[in-house]
Image (cartoon, rainbow, N blue to C red):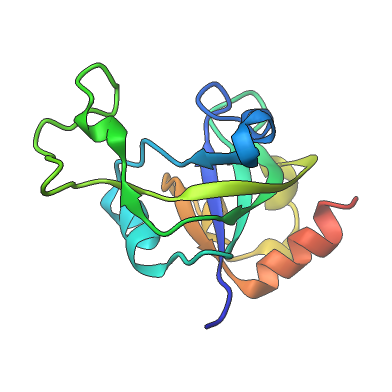
Length: 156
């Protein structure tokens, strides 16, 4: 099976690359996804070993902050069952969960590659995160874009 690549957005106040680096086994559960398309990517397409661009969003300087790997198969997101969680979903039940997550494991922190730099890089034309109006927290990354980012931008 061919390895796939993903860009996964997280607000640094919620889960940053430093939180991932400091987590037990440098692994975090990717909780709080409440978009069906993003959930379906995790459920139907993500596989253990897939590459992840860990992206800081909704912050002063959004951008790629590190590399990670999908470290689990999808499983129910426990925050959907917790009434105290901002991600609580009263229509979801343990017998019929609506929301899933995967675990991600840190490969390495990198220099921050700002969104502005990504937009100015012609080799990244067509990358979904750069599309105007795209708000998905998880988007697929083409092998071509993955190779360019990991070989040229993260090392610059």
